[in-house]
Image 1 (spheres, rainbow, N blue to C red):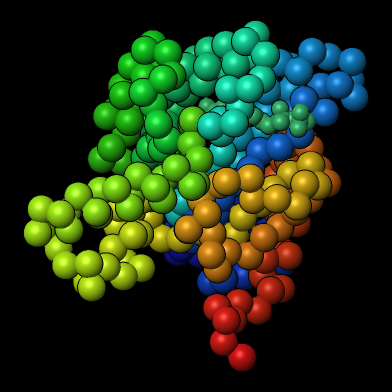
Image 2 (cartoon, protein in one colour):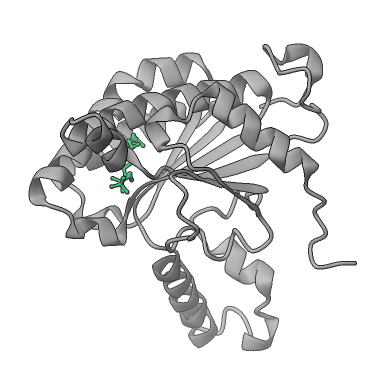
Length: 249
Ligand code: FPP
């Protein structure tokens, strides 16, 4: 990952390369509505959504954004029809397989966060292979949240820390924000500077609840499959106009 202006490909001239977010989180919403508006089945929206994601990842690389974390499947998404859940699991598996060579070539470092215990074993294997094959890459940190819930992640961290206290490894009075952060899936990533949510919904939806504490939130009416370079450019322009105060005056 680089913020060196000379290596950025086609960074729009109205963007300040010294003031880009280091880590962007995205809630990829609106695939179903995109498909419905065109008279397509919902699955078509997810397929086109995957194309939009591929393009966004490439754009992060081109424009020097170091980390991208996307919400692909929430713990609540199991409530969708079996047909849609199966489709999504197969889509993820295919993408991790088909895109692996490209991720390796582009130096993308992939991580998948969430509870993978109950995803199909074939998807788990595809994830293991892709994560292992990209773990030494030095380019964009690409994190995909699957069967992920922010509250569950915090609960799990608290359980681990409580066990360490019980075992006398740490004192309860030593627990601070850093202790919690270190026990989250994203321990080795900076907190996101910017959260993008498509399709106009003004919610965080249990995504990265701890990590998004000081993130700038950008909501666009654009539906995820239409979230292209131009839409991303607008999100970054909006971000660069914000004055991040982190609670200070
Ligand atoms: C939300 O739109 C989207 C999802 C639940 C799935 C997102 C998945 C992709 C874009 C594929 C990405 C692939 C990988 C490998 C990460 P929705 O279905 O809730 O849309 P709606 O609100 O319009 O119904």
